[in-house]
Length: 355
Image (cartoon, rainbow, N blue to C red; front, side, top):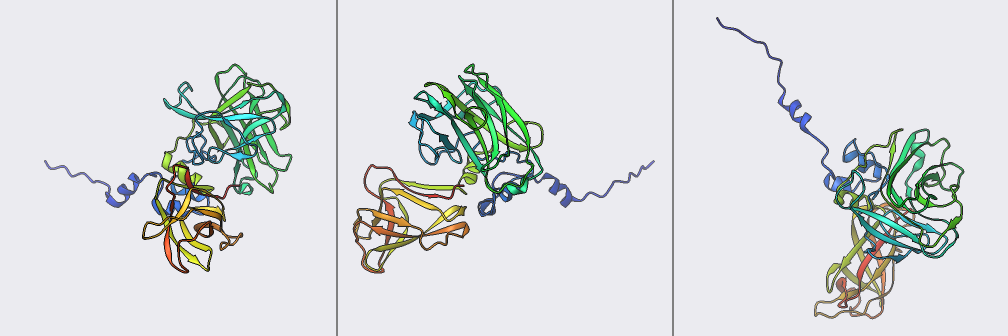
């Protein structure tokens, strides 16, 4: 006896689509995205953490493995700014004992060095907060401290909108802190998430020399529940950071880009950046020189500016620069190479488009 079975149509194309999954940074399309939200959409719906570099692993500005004087209102680790009105040090630490974390986890540590009536913390500004009005968010993270005045906080800069999370117990151990907040009004400026030692009302409190906090795996996500920290690859996290700050580093004679002399004492060069910068950047540099075909090397530059880039431009993919050399080795309209110099000093060119 022959038995016939009817099978549903099998559509190979549809089955292949079911196998498609987000796979991190989607090439140049990801790098050219106009906003972090577009980047997140490209790398998958499941992306939850609105904070960038929440696990403190990206540090383009330098290596802070030892205690470094924490300048007020200054960035150290990418996207995280130190905010303090006393005297403190900052350090990029490594921890092995955070429950449920990777075997090695980076963190940031701030230590008060002089007793005073102060505040001490780190903060990250979130771009374009108006899109989040009326929505509920949970801010969470791991904190270690020896004072019960350490806490998570979240607020809209320049307004009375905000929320203060629970205090750390001050027992010197890692603790998971979290709280939920609904943005009610329409913000007119940046949304700030931070970790602070303060009075609990964004004000001063007595901080004794030696009091500290460490923080890592900080996460801001929509909803009323703190979910496990979302670990992104280093490359993905770096690309997100580079929208706000990009730094090229070189060593002796490393070439960066062609440079041409215009007039008698101005070099011009265009630098392509790997990720679209948020706005026209400010520029800092060290140890740059001009190399010419015969092997000649200029002494460096007294000024570098982006005067050919409109201050109203956004999403910058190419940065034109006007550079004033301390000595000129090129004839008018002759071309050389912008390069690292031949010293052992730190050689870099940095573009800052931070909030």
